[in-house]
Picture 1 (tube, helix red, strand yellow):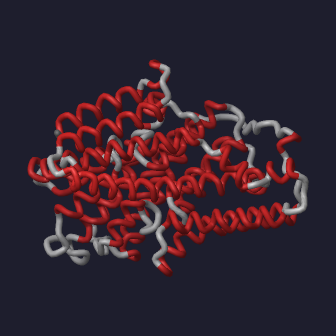
Picture 2: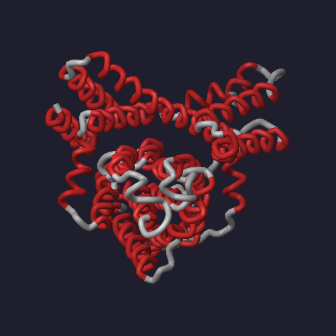
Picture 3: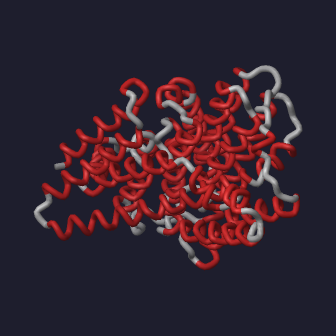
Length: 430
């Protein structure tokens, strides 16, 4: 069963990478791959009730990420409709392409630690689209946004799903994570950033603004919607920490609030104008195929997990590679191919807290895992939620990313590893 699911997954993965050659949308391929993998599992499992229970658990996890993505993309779209990103772009005064790249990368890095890497990638990709007309330049910026968002999410307990998993499982503490992973994560961003800076020249050429696209709203109304939208994004991690509200519910709460605000503001306006400025219009504009692609990929990876393929792979790594650091590095590299969440979940199950406690010498193991799983996904465009979201927004081709960005991400990945191991050798970790 595991072999059959693996074959389907590999075939689907290859077809996704050849999307432009075969002229079939990657979302369709991902959905077919995910459903067929689960169909094999359901057909070949004797206990049908138990297999359906596994499927329901997987759907619940996927649904939480889908709801989060829908909420985040709709809020970002509404902020864009009301000219919120114009306010950000006006605050960025530099016309140098290199300086702009550094501003966006550093802003992405620190925003990811506060919000999360997925939300930040969506926001900053929208900002880059407002600032850069040349598609080749914009794609380089977008590649750096993926790297910077994943690197920024790795050193914060709220910045990446896998880091949050380790934090909730009491494998890492918030303060030690920031202390131990900030410098390695910075290295993972700065090395690719320095290389890309060598490729860029000249000044920024921004897209011409269409007067018809400008929102017919007052400055007060614009600021109100933008303030509520950005506040909603910021409150998601706050609500998670304070009252334990899951991020997808926090995002839905924020969407509900901004929806109410826009309805109240435009309650008496003509239907045509009100519709253009509504949350309903924003929902129509979000990239639904990318969301379905995300769902299909997660379904396929979930099937690999429930059939024991990923668990077996993690166990094989542990047995075949006696050096724990090397096995963690391999887990990070594998997270570029399959989702890092099941890989980390498998590691949590493999290494019980009694054997690898949060404090003491073994604390470095969990922090190293958080770094590698968080930043390794940048090596391929579909290796992280941030990459998948950006892939849909900017229509990034798999092989373009592989050719131009993967090597940069790999250089950053191993640079951060070098910094972490140096800190460990010097006794700087806590």
